Image (cartoon, rainbow, N blue to C red):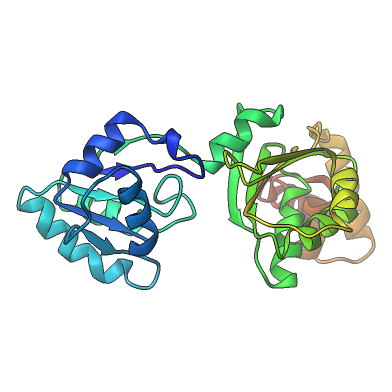
Length: 276
């Protein structure tokens, strides 16, 4: 049973989640010390029922959890905050239990992703979740390249130590896009920053940040697909400059955002025509 726990405010724990935590035979959690605090707050006994499950031991715990479920035990999976498996451990366990033909269910509830989206005021019909932004500069830039054409709303997590740098980088790439930054969501010192990427980045420049952050970034403006004549003209130009078919196609695909396969087929036809 996947159970969502509060991302800050303990009052957000649902009645069903409370019942499951009180009655479960075993509760697997990221940090037993953290979860004991949650149990103590609700006067639940944690003795002998809490088991650590984190990124370093999740794979090795799957077999044990499957055995427990096969034996008829009620097994609950929680994370330190929010919904397990969403940028937290849990995916492997759920996959293993399901693969064994056993029932996996959920007591849904708090999620920092949904919480931030719901108050962002940005489009929510289509969005993508990116987890934490990579630490390596090259990987971050590659991700930003994808976001340059991503029309869906983008949600990602960031640590307080790195959020200023990340927002500064984004302000150089997408200064005019709207963004909402949620800090300490549902907690006493919750803070919501709204504005353009450039404005929010500037507001962070001279302050110390505390607490995990969730960032909701506006997607790219929709672009109309270039017509067939424009694609053909671009290919003719590249081929006329002496580019190979492969290089010409790569240049046109990157510049116009068209489908690689169709562009390649057109380039082959154009080269064949010029050879005759």
